[in-house]
Amino acid sequence: MAQIPKPGPESLETARARMRIDLAACHRLAAQFGMTDLIYTHISARLPGAEDRFLINPFGLLFEEIRADNLVTVGPDGELLDDPAGLGINRAGFVIHSAVHQARPDAVCVMHTHTLAGVAVSALRDGLLPYTQHAARFHNRIGYHAYEGVAVDLDERARLVRDLGPHKALMLRNHGLLTCGSTVGEAFELMFFLEFACRAQLQIQATGQAVAVPARDAIQRAADTFDRAAGRSSPRLWQALLRGLDQSDPTYRHLPPVL
Image (cartoon, rainbow, N blue to C red; front, side, top):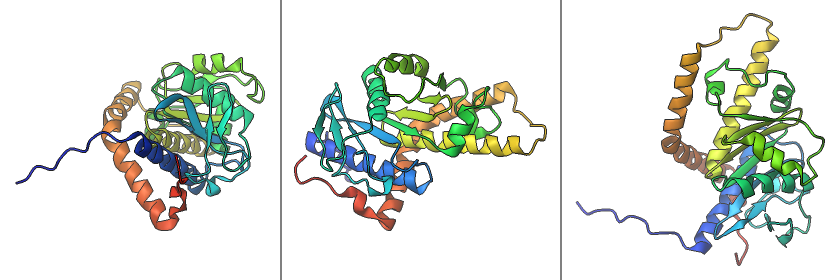
């Protein structure tokens, strides 16, 4: 039987096109799953071949309007290197996302949301509780950042990075949720499950009944299992999500004529 040749390394142009498409898809998926706050949240991804630059959504478009060709390219000091829609970016978006991208080379994609469930749990004293298998995924794997007002001051970046630590998830107190990943798909998957865990916790607490909290060692085993499985499952999940988008509305894939 003939051997299937292994794919060679992507060209820079192909890698950038793929990143734009994935990031646009992430915005569409966030809208599809109800993880938007009108125009006021943001998702970013590091630009391949230019590690000090990142792509982010323009400030003024709904997530349903994001395409690969209208993403903004931002430089390390906040300069807009390419702004196809002419709308600029959210200042808080630059502060939060630049902090993580600059401090964490592994954070290729950073996703930030203001969902009802995420904001509600972020305001609870005890934060995310290990009530469910979805929450177990974040056992000892989530940081907490105290609310400092709207995140428009550059000096907050150091504290955001400190509170995120080595984790891939951060709860911004009284504000919302943040996840990051080595791929866009990983960041989205983490956000989906963190959001699910927050929703489940609120519904459980709303019953007012005693909670059957899992044993600590069971929670730890579950978290370890998720860590081991992530590398195999995340790419499959992302491709499945893209197939769904392609069937419903493939316009997110529109690329600029020259990257």
